[in-house]
Length: 338
Image (cartoon, rainbow, N blue to C red; front, side, top):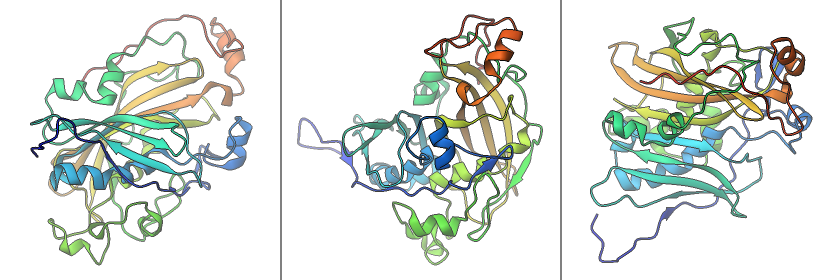
């Protein structure tokens, strides 16, 4: 859109209070970081809201920029910066793209200015160079070899999901399992940005003549069967999402439609306090076998949550964590390119 002004203000949405939906989440037979008691044991004041919950606040802004294409070929790529707990207010921002560009910067903040996430959004088919320019693409390119892996030492770059293909679908009243103990209907009752196209009543009036799955719930659809992949490190230990990219290729994804998932570890990394597994999940239409989307997820496990971390690091001949959590050097495990 042409503008007579030299500069255009960034698009921003209203402040919203996203709801906590994962207080009862269970994996590997224990509660997750979203449980208040588990969060408190790790020094957090309450269980955080899951990162992709914030994706919904971007949908109206990106639809304003890109129209119907946002739900068909949209890509949201984010690095999560600070946790949000229920009751806190969050606002989404989108930078106006340069003329003729189909990609832009996005971010979200709390009311006091604390950053929640930073990232990119785009529409259209992506060349390898464009994929590398996304938030997750840039972070993959900057990964340094991990200095030591203890929790994830048995995982390998290039490892395929044991459940490939995983068969999934999402109905309105379908309970999504222990990892996601709620339904799409439950989410739609509290979603920050209601949309008629998400509902059984309004879906038939959408451009695709059926209800579509909200972008944040694509993460739930794909995460509901992640346990089948077998990408388990040592445990019990507590993890969180550190970064995430969802890209639609032939979207939208539809309610009550079958999909098949294939997963692969594309990188392993670590920070002073976490070990990360970067997994690419490819989404295929369960009826036509067409590739319709992808997700890249940086799933980070907190070293301090694994009680045997220091003893196993020592047994492996690796340095234990110091006061800052910083480990010593070990052999590199580089990211797999795609």
